[in-house]
Length: 173
Image: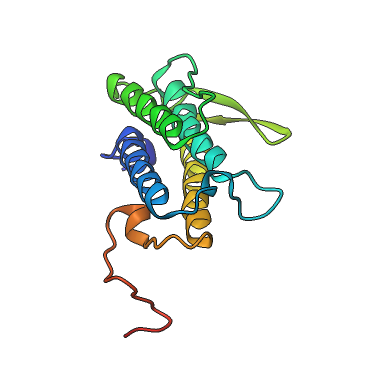
């Protein structure tokens, strides 16, 4: 079975990890420092709030061309947890409302990456560019939270892993 014939639709993956991102935001709001949405790993990287928005937009950058729809974005000017949740919720609703039958895997996609431009078949665009970038920005949200002292585990990221509070592979108790 080829990548374009997978039994798991990209929509399923995107919805799952957008949901995980919403759960991460809930934990960051409860446990994080007050300025966590403005925190970043290094000065030249985007802050957490921008990482969330880019992650949501990558979901749409995958889904819109794959379904033949016009590009959409649910960015808003509300840089609070509520504004980020609203963008994620609208993105999830959009994905849920669109059909994933008859996905156009062969359509070429022309995209910008930084200052470069490239064209790839949809299957390559999805699996070699867009999904890795989606996961990258999701990982940055997790990493900024951890670097800011929020008690996150890998389970907060993927929803599968489970560890007892305070567990460490480096210092197992």
